[in-house]
Length: 155
Image (cartoon, rainbow, N blue to C red; front, side):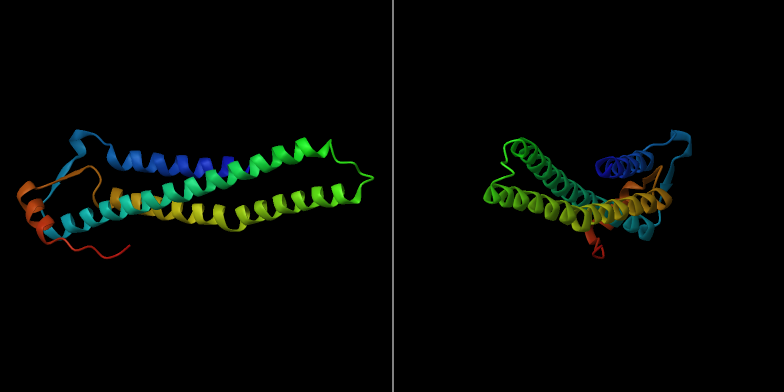
């Protein structure tokens, strides 16, 4: 269930990005205002940064989920072999289960939240880009001048 929620969020972000970059040729306009071109270029930079951040958070989520799955398999394999009459074996098995519970709690508290924040920020930037820049071209001469002096705020 946890993985499905994250995957739906990521798919929504990907769809939003796709919508930001598509559109009919008839609806396309040329942006000639240097400030608007600069704003769009900065949004594109921010979009790339946030996409990288989202991908890194997704990789961390995937790694932690794989580790948790591996530990679940180990627990399932060891469960049948534990001698319930041996307190040392029972204690070792409980420690393994406790380790799994801590790992799952860490995933729920930190990794998933971090991924959701990254996806939200990415989707927000996609929406901004779509609103201000989507389905438009930049006037080439103005674009070249803007690129030479472009300074974007950190986002």
